[in-house]
Structure formats: structure tokens, C-alpha cells
Length: 442
Image 1 (cartoon, rainbow, N blue to C red):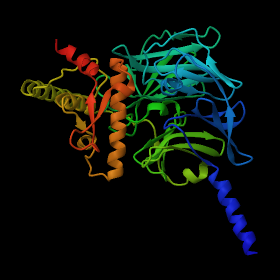
Image 2: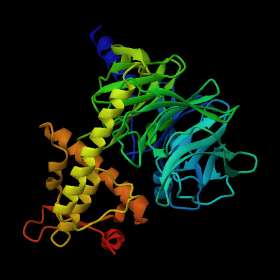
Image 3: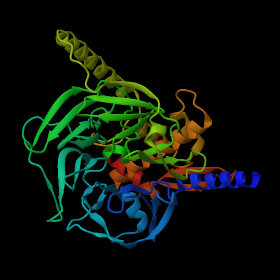
Image 4: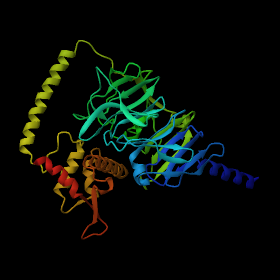
């Protein structure tokens, strides 16, 4: 009897543990494949891992990659789009090139090139065709919607008249009942402004502004990246679900802390992509929805109610604040000497500009990793939290620098060892980055 009990526990442990897969890369392609009804992870240049729900385990499937670029660049440079009845698309993050997974082969499908025009755009599918809203590129922010025609294999944009959202990037959006709904992202003027709810109706080709988002988060769009086409968003240890047609959003308690990067639902299950804060390895977990969405913290309307009778007073306050802030800005600008003057259309913002100035002032001796902590320790966080914030901040900084200067992501910094203590790593800004921003002083 004892032997039987031990055997049962071992079998149960083994079958449970098979639901978790440790990826070979930090950010693999993860999706639910409706063509073979399996969760899929692509993290290897020879194949993919697929979850067999009947056997409760991950299985390897060999793939052929017919790429026109390196596998590493392919993994970094594309967004995956797939839904029931559509092809499996891998879309250029800046718009342009498109790959598809057909049978066991990933191959080029487009007749295009790297547009480099919509980084940070909102990717979504409508009637089986990839779409991108907004983004930035070529020193400008966008508010257009581009569409990939699966027959022509070319990109087109909608001709839109009338009211439109301002140019922006990192908006959160998805399609519900033939309408594209969106919570506005970061604009060129201010990423901390109040978020708005918009909808685009494909039949009329018209935008509609529904009003302000009921919640206000200063850094609401800071970590969206690849989440922009998904239903869920992780924010401050909670999971947010947006139900646009029902005009509400729901907040659930997150049991996995702040490690969640992606949540992919299918029926009663979820695929959750997390990052292990200790070793930075990507862990992919299959679990039941009921386990994750067990505790509801809040349910409320998406759109903030309009209060009548206060518009004049509010306008006076806003006007006064604008005048005061303008005067303060002019005075500060006169009294502060900066090595860099940023181009007015630069995509760098807030702390990123401060980091650029900091690195430029230390470009000869370099910057220790620990010195970046001063930019992320505003609320006396734990050491693990500081490390995670620092990694995310540097990653976002390098991404934007790379997109704006065209310096490869991995070459934004040169890494050298300290002359006195070889255990200490120093970061030195690439001279090409320095020259790129110095030209704005001329």
C-alpha cells in the first residue's frame, strides 16, 4: 500500500510539472495554434514546442526556417498574429516584411521591405488580415492604420476623414464585434496624460472618441510592448481585463507577482509567459483560468462620467497651469547646462533623457550598473525589484536608442571591465549614439 501511494504521488508530480516549459530565450514567440489546437512556443532555429493537452506534456516539432535574416533578428524583430481561421503571421515590428507558418515551414509571404515606420504600434487582426495602428518611425509619430492585404501581399492604409486620435505609440487595443477599440497610448507631447477610449468602425472608416478612461495610471503604457494586441495587461501586481463592448474593466489579483509578460487564453485554460527575476529565464506555464482569476479586486466602467457645468473652471485651471509650467520651463532651461539638446521629435522621454545625459557626462570612464539604481529606487524597493526595474529601464532605453539612431540593439553600449576591479562591469555609450545626438546642437 505504501509503495502504491509513493508511486501515485510521483506520477502526479511528474504530470503536473510537465505543464511548465523553460524557454531557451527570454522572449520567445508564444501563441495558441488554432490549426492544430495546441499552445506553441518557438524558441529554437530547428523547431518549436507544442503542448499536448491529452498527454499533459510538451512535445518537440521540427520546423524549417526559410528566413532572409538571422534567426536572432527574426525573433527580435517581429510580432506574431494568429486567430481562429487565419494564417499564422509574423509581422515586422516596424511594418513591412511578413512571414507565415505554413505546414512545417516559416517563409516570407510579402512583397515588401522593412518600412521602419510603426515601431510601438498596436498590432491586431481583422478578418484574417494583419493591421497596425500608430507607432513611430523616421522621426515622427503616427495615427494611421495600415492593413496587410493577404491577396496582394502588400501594405495599404485606410483613407480616414474627420475626427482621429492624435499620433501615438504603445496603445492598448483589440477587435470586438467588427470594431477596433483602443485605450490611447503615449503621445509625442506627454505620455502621462489622461488616457482616452477610442473606436474605429471598419464599415464607415470613422473614428469615435468615447471619452476618458475611468482609471488614470501615470505609467500605464510603459510596459505594454508585445501586450498591445492582447486582452489582459499586468499593472502593479494586478491583472487588468478590458471588455470594451460591455464598457467595463476588471482587476484580478495576480498570484505570480510582477513576472508576467504575456497571458494567452483559450477556452478554460491560460498560457502564462513569466520571467524568472533571478536567472532571467522565460517560464511558460499552462494553467486553468479559474486559478488565476479567482480573486476579483475591482469591477468598474471603462469610461469616466462627464460632469457638466465645470468646463469653464477647468479650462481656467488648465490655462493657468500651462502658463506657470511654461515660465518655469524657460527659467530652468536658461540656468541648466546640458551636454545634449534633444531633437523635438526624439522618442526619448523622461528618465530616458536623463539616462542619456548621465551616460554622456561619463562617456570616458563609463557607468557602473549599480549607478543606474538611482533612477529606479523612488519608493525604497527590494533588491530584486530594483534589479528588475533597472533591467526593464535599460532595455526600453536601448530599444528606443536603437530605433532612433539605427545602431543595433546589442551595440548601444560597449561593455568593459573596471581597470582596478575586474568583477565590475562598465557601460560606455556607443560613439555613434553620441554623434547622433550631438548633431542637434549644431
